[in-house]
Length: 179
Image (cartoon, rainbow, N blue to C red; front, side, top):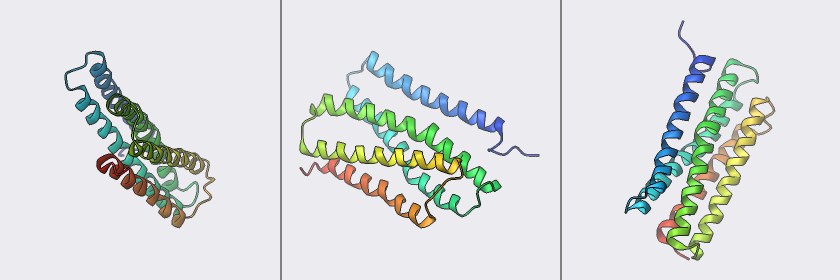
């Protein structure tokens, strides 16, 4: 019989692989700051973008999982599978990516811009809002895990748009610097 991804053994292996990937990313980032190359800014920017893309992928995908999860009765095999998927996505990918995006972003904001500029303050405000959405999704992961979700699939579809709108604002502020 084939092992399912919700079984303990594949889950343990997935956690080990994910932890290894995060550790390697952190070691590379730390190595760049301990022995900085001449183009440290470009390396920090590249790692920041990798972290942001990973975080955004999770923020855009997790509410879709919630939509699909609401279609299944609590305790059903599908519901239990969605619980595992949601928890792994949130804890193993999204949260480490968010932390790295914040750390590298603050480093870049300080070293390059000295935290000056209206566009930067507006962008940071949007990133704070995105972090609030992240925390809200974390609470939803816990609610689904406890079979206590109170939102409908339609409500989760609407929540799915919030990170996308914030991302658009953040990218425009970072690239165009309109204010």
